Length: 115
Length: 114
Image 1 (tube, rainbow over the protein chains, first blue to last red):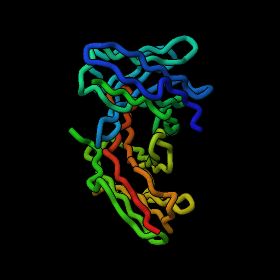
Image 2 (tube, rainbow over the protein chains, first blue to last red):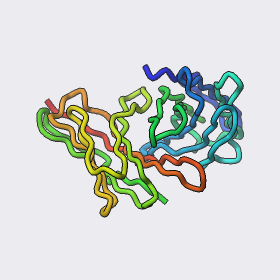
Image 3 (cartoon, helix red, strand yellow):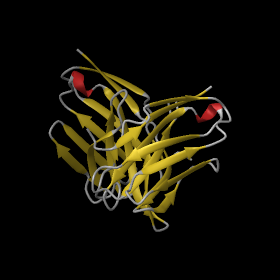
Image 4 (spheres, helix red, strand yellow):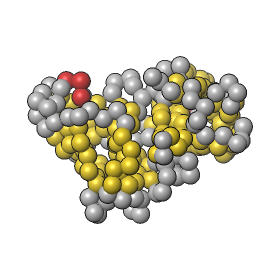
């Protein structure tokens, strides 16, 4: 158990809709990251938050947004959904810095299916 | 622009033999490298890492080798066990434009055959 909790585990919705994915980081971790994994693709970095503030942005679409709340949980909002948004969305958390000295701890992901 | 590449989508190895997973990167600014392991229906879990100042790091059955001149790293698992069957992601980290950046490869599915 990584200590990172993601809900829901599965989400099925229609094109054009909006969904919210939720992530609770590991206790004590201030950084939260969102990644997208499409079929047969690697993990694509979307966005990072550190202690409530956006720290880095990756290949995140304008239809997507995220935030980190004072209790450090984070939400990823996906709107105007398209079929191509179907993917596994992972949340990860870490201490001060990721990779360099503090590996990421991943949740089990939310599988989004857009029909 | 795929900065971290795992050119083998899959690898099959017999139990007890050595498994070698490869990874190439293009950006010389990467200075820390990690391997993650992923089982179905679970998130990736950290396996082993190596700093760019080293060329080898060993942890039990797992050894990571780094060849900076070739921009290549590899993960050796010996002896391979059935529980090692999973998808392995390599990742490269750097501080770019003031922000820490972690880039993952596409993953290699390792199957250990009994």
